[in-house]
Amino acid sequence: MPFVYGVLQDTCLEIEKRREIYFIEGGTDWARSHFLIQSFPTYSVTQIVTRVENLTACEVFANVREFKKGFGEANFWEKDFVNTVG
Image (cartoon, one colour):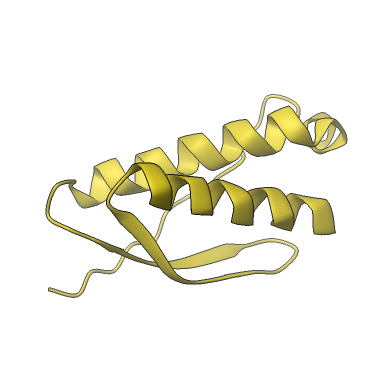
């Protein structure tokens, strides 16, 4: 699975380049990914989470074909937990 982590990292860097969303810290283990994200009030929390989830899932499934086989029709991301600091 190391390649999946690389795809996630590259995708997050692309998101930073194209949007005002910045990944301050990130971490993954075999079952979870955690991100500390900073953004201007341009986007709502829901918009940020949705964009990050959609873009990362699409990139992982497009670049790691054997990974999609394991998921079938299941979602790449499950339940969200979001905490904000104002």
